[in-house]
Length: 130
Image: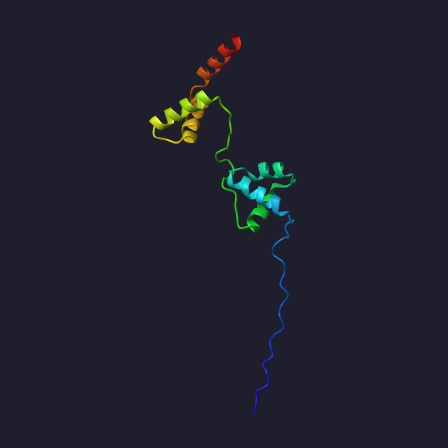
């Protein structure tokens, strides 16, 4: 004789714990992921892709399994165009100090802007007087 099938208790309705994130086009998601990989902040990415709320950018990145590389208040990315002779000289100096060009440029900029502000201001003032 067969046993009757056991009754299952009714399933409790699950309450949604996550808010639905806006759906973005694949090219926009790729752009967001690229900018996040470049070290941009949520605000910078939102401004560049045309999203009003940086929180939505962060949510979209989390949904893709990504997160922002930089923490708030961390390093900033500054891209600067310089004449080729300056780039060559900076590369040579970085090689001599056994560091990357990015680290060398960051050290020089920090030295001039934070530690030697008076000298930097004097150099800028004499450049304008000529």
